Image (cartoon, rainbow, N blue to C red; front, side, top):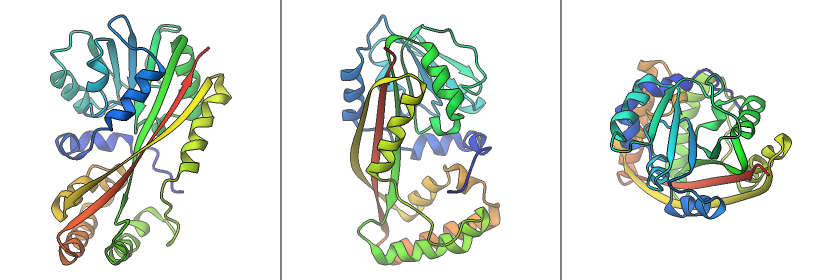
Length: 265
């Protein structure tokens, strides 16, 4: 798999579009978290990599104190404005691995489609130190797959990726791999190496439908796509829009949301 380390700051350049196009997460996912660890008005919580807050609101509604650790300055400003009516919400701007947070202090640390930016050994050790005994770490992500039931459109889009994307990122043709249940189970076992117990892994599913323009707006919020040189990216996106419009005008995205839970005991 290619490495996109160093691209984590690119999101901060597309804040408005990111907030508009990136999806939230299934209510069932949050219910599973809150069944695993009780969160209320006396709880202290940290979110790692909040982005524009797609996963923040459902936790804030529990009435807890929530500290958002967000690397992007523009995202940090958006979060402060978006959740200004929550007096127990605060934002620390910086990389999670660099900020100072107290040990043995938090009931929940969670991260939504962001923890892969944190070096594993540093991140898991830090989360473990921050949690109270009985506290939980919830790592979850959305894993989209396009054209699951539209093979002709999928083939055209794959050809465009080969022409515009793979060459930019030095990826060999045919190496793209969709997220699987086995991948989720492998992620769920990582915390065991750092002292966590009570490991759980859950999967949730949904579908989203986009017009051609909406779909390329969504792609424009992904760091690896933002990193493509602008003229090449514009040609790439134009080709994708043309393909979608010639195949009915919409594209269906099948999402797999994986949730990995672990506890400090």
